[in-house]
Amino acid sequence: MNTDTQHDAQYAWKHKDLLDVSQLDKDDVQHLLDLAVSFQEINNRSVKKVPTLKGKTVILFFAENSTRTKTSFDVAAKRLSADTFSLSKSGSSINKGETLKDTGLTLQAMHPDVIVIRHSSSGAAEYLSKLLPCSIVNGGDGWHAHPTQALLDSYALRTVWGPDFTGKTLLILGDIEHSRVARSNLYLLNLLGAKVRLCSPRTLLPRQCGQWDCEVYTDINEALKGVDAVMCLRLQLERQEAGLLPDLSEYSRRYCLTKERLALANPGAYVLHPGPMNRGYEIADDVADSKQCLVLDQVSAGVAVRMAVLYLLGTRNDHLPA
Ligand code: ASP
Image (tube, rainbow, N blue to C red; front, top):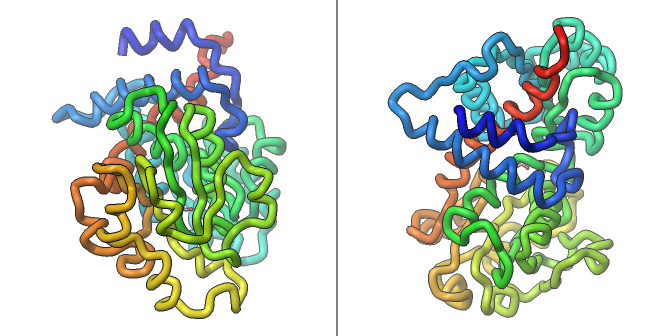
């Protein structure tokens, strides 16, 4: 990690928390993704552990379901030798009526260096960041933001497109209204120079999306023409009010990304999905299993990106006198 630490020493990382990508400028993002590249090298070794965060404590507080994000943060922290502790809604006192404030203060009293929080309320991570002195990482809050997902998506795209996304167009397809992934990606992809299109049924488009920096479509065939990548989103049924969709089979008939539809995009266009995938609804099997699909590259990028995030936040006070 010599070159990385030198590189890092020259870079003034100024953030206590990672609440959303919108707090980052282009230099922060390039620095974080470069750092993630060096951590990916560790992930490819036979012994995948470095002592960088030895003695640091990372708490994974997931009050909403998660497979990828939680495992990935856990693996990332352990590969940096941090101690990790997990708390979920079902096994905790949140189920006994404890407030977020009291849970946060209780966790802080155990002196963690970083708390990663996933919560169904938009703003939960920001609330804890103001309340607690330790670093807070937003692992997804309601419809609002999912910064490490957007960062890992850009990492995966960087490996195939290179660091400058100028001239590339990416389509985000599916349930935009309820998606924190779409919101964080829209900001980050624009920051890195890509053009972004959104496509979904009118009832799943956010009312304010006309003011966002993107083109908006309801016709999938039009939306796909000339794009270099498609990011499919899951229907977030757990956040939808009834009546937004006529029925699931009608949705998949009109919006599922099939091989035939993908052929309308630029040749070799890449396909991304944050997971979990509902095969047959938003993405067809033959697309999900194709070489163009980066889903597993996204998962692998997730560990490296989260190592970079935990490193930057977990070591930010190390230069201060003990
Ligand atoms: N895993 C992503 C999230 O937590 C996407 C999804 O759940 O559909 O937002």
